Every structure is written in structure tokens, then in C-alpha cells.
Length: 375
Ligand code: NAD
Ligand code: UFG
Image 1 (cartoon, helix red, strand yellow):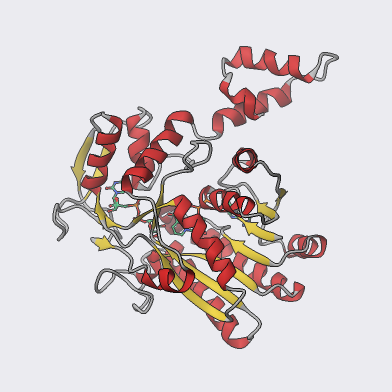
Image 2: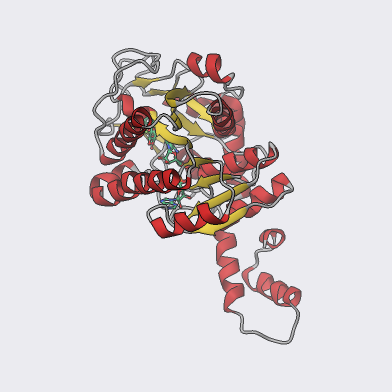
């Protein structure tokens, strides 16, 4: 059985689906601070299999010990953490507590339980401002400009020290570039709280009318069209990379870094253009000043992952954007509408009428019927 921390979140839910499809048994531990249980119900629906879910926190040692004692856990995919760059600047202690403290507690519990195979969600942010692109794993790590980035680098260092000190550990440090897109079914995807920080969710929310217009942060970078360049990677390709890393860790000891990116850079204006082509709409946007802390260009050299894991991103920008758009159109408020409907069902007082009749009554009142199938 694989323990997936943060498995209800954006990347975690896609990885859980791939694990189930590959025949693994899965236990998800998530405190749902940035996700919904509904994502996992949809994962089960897509996989045609059930998973184990425990609502809990990686910082709670007793809870972790109980899970390791109760379930036959052989390895851990560790996604749990906080990820909003701006929020990390305002609330650094939360970020160090959750991301660093949580990872530390998880490793302690794993070691005591005799589980030494771990895949960690790191980020290209640890490269700081890259000296050259594409970036390979040998590139020096930089100085992340925010507590979120610092926390990722600190956990990487912690895990490297751990693997050096104790040869029983097999650890993958997966440095993601820019994950976007959604499962092609449109049932699971990214559901940011509040106003999104990241480019693609911002674009899709402008397009469905939840936000007014996109700010293109910086049109004066030394790039062909002046806007920032990133290596966008489809979340399903990213999820599949985790399964291959998990398998590789059966054969190798120590801590290993793998970049997970496509090796292709795309500018902000390019994304807008592809989005407009796919949706046959015009996206309202304006050129705005640079965003603090942003770099001009960043894309991966993913050849190490291809050579060592047999992993290569298969989906291009068009699929990434089309899938993100399908998710957004099918779930204009993410998982939240369904949550509200569920809440209103809970509030209905117990009555002698059957569950189905109660459910229909709520659906009529809220006018939301599409959520019915998922309750
Ligand atoms: P997400 O917020 O959708 O998922 C994180 C999940 O962890 C959420 O379900 C949240 O409820 C849970 N969680 C947070 N703190 C927890 C705790 N203390 N105990 C238990 N559960 C907890 O984020 P995501 O985009 O799926 O990112 C997953 C991981 O990948 C994170 O570690 C993130 O830093 C990393 N990462 C993400 C990106 C990106 O652009 N999305 C890029 C690089 C790295
Ligand atoms: N951008 C805009 N307008 C927006 C949002 C973004 O023009 O409203 C631009 C940015 O300036 C940048 C590009 O779009 O040029 C991508 O920005 P994102 O915020 O989507 O992504 P970042 O590359 O800034 O950062 C992301 C994650 C980090 C992670 C990093 C590397 O947010 O957590 O990728 O993995 F560390």
C-alpha cells in the first residue's frame, strides 16, 4: 500500500488515480486545508476502485504512528504542504511549520515504522534565477526569494542529509516545473482558493467571467515577445512520473533528483494565443509591470528523467490548455458547488422520508442537479 500525503490536492489526486489504475492500494492522508473530499470520490469513480482516506495532518506524530501500525505501507508519496508564494511571505511560520516541520515529522514516523521509500514534491523554484536554460539537475540551487521556496530547499537538504546518514533510505526529489491541465475526463483538476496566483487558472477564470481581465506581468523581459517563459507540464504526465520514480526507488538507495518538465518553454502571450484558438474567444488582458520575484525564463532539461526513469512528457500545450478548459467549464466553481449542496443536505432534519427523496428536495431548492450523481 502507498501512503499519499496531500492526495486530495491538485497534483496528488491525479497521482492517486494513476496509482489506482496501476493496481496499487492507496491510503490518502490529507487535512483538506486546500482541497475537497469530492476530488477523491471522483478519482474512485474514474478508477472504478476504492481508496482509503484519513482526514489528518502530517504534523501529528501520533496519528502517523497509528497509520503506519494499521496499514501495510511500503512507500510514501509526499505532496502535503502549503504552496502559495505570496501567502508564504505574509505567514512564514505557517509555511515552515507545515512544509518543513510536517516533512520532518513524516520522516521520523517513517523511520520508526521501517518505511524508507519516499517521493518528495520539490519545485524548480529551488534553482532560483537560473544562470542558463535549459536547467539540468547539476545546476546550483539558488536563493529562493520567498519562504515557500526556502521551505522546499530546506526539505531537499534535510532529505539529502538523511539519505547520506542512513543507507536504508531511497528518496526521489522531483523538481516540478509548471504543472497545468487536468484529467481529460474534466472530473478532477485544479481548484484554487480565492483569486489564483498562477497563470492558467487565472486565464480560465477570466474566460468564464469570474475575473475581469488577465494582467500579463512584464512585457520587457529579454525573451522573443518580452513576456516570461516557463516549462508547462501536463499534470497527468507529472503524475505518471511519480509512479516511475516509485519503481526506480526499489532499485536505488540514496537521494536522487529528477526534473519533471517537458523541455519546452512557452511565453505568456503564447499561452493566451493557444487558449484563444482552442476556445475561439478573445481573452481580455493588459500588459502590466513585472511581478516581484519573477524570473524571465525557466525550462527544464528533462533528459535525466528520461534516461533513468524512462519518463517523458507526452502531452503538448494544446492538450494541457484544452483539458484545463474542459475542467473549468464542467466545474465553474471547482468542487465548491457540490460542497455547498452537501452541506445543505446535512442541515436537513432527520425525517421518515427516504434519503433519495430528501436529496431530490434539496436539488430542487438549490437548482443544482448535475452534482446529484456525485453525492
Ligand atoms: P494542493 O494545495 O492542491 O495540494 C496539497 C494538499 O496537501 C492539499 O490537499 C492540502 O489540503 C494538503 N495539506 C496541506 N498541509 C497539510 C498537512 N499539514 N497535513 C495533511 N495535508 C496537508 O497543491 P498541489 O499543487 O497539488 O501541490 C502538491 C505539492 O507539489 C506541494 O508540496 C507543492 O508545494 C508542490 N509543488 C506544486 C507546484 C504547483 O505549481 N502546483 C509546483 C511545484 C511543487
Ligand atoms: N503570469 C502573468 N499573470 C498572472 C500570473 C502569472 O503574467 O496573473 C506570468 C508570470 O509572470 C510568469 C508566468 O505567467 O511569467 C507563470 O507564472 P505562474 O505564477 O503560473 O508560475 P511561476 O513560474 O511563477 O511559479 C510556479 C509555481 C511555484 C513553483 C514554480 C516552479 O507557482 O510554486 O512554478 O515550479 F515554484
